[in-house]
Length: 155
Image (cartoon, rainbow, N blue to C red; front, side, top):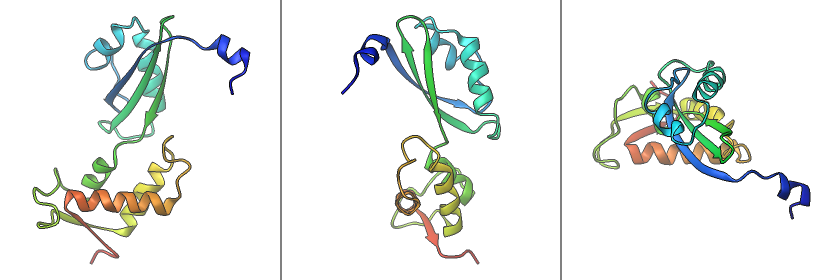
């Protein structure tokens, strides 16, 4: 149940915008400019804040951002770590997964890689209450669907 104060202080939402922006490289031009500009949001404030939050990642790392635009031209945003598929491709050293997963193996990675990816993904807002084991199982499933074989140890 919401309290009366929470109900009265809620701001009406104009839109929810999902973007993929390279870490530390948000600029007021496409894709950020047109997406946020149509709701009259402060582009420079978003760019400065986003770049500050993503400075610990390497440049060109694709970051998923969800921006909530309010009708009073203010906004809030959450940044998620890169996708599991991006991490798996980097760990396996490939550009894309197998064209025939289950039949052709694109590459192999070790369980250590899966564990490291799971540790990073555990900090995401949607995964913070999941156990590390369940995140690892999910990552292994994603690897299998990409044609990446997960082995105990790499030779």
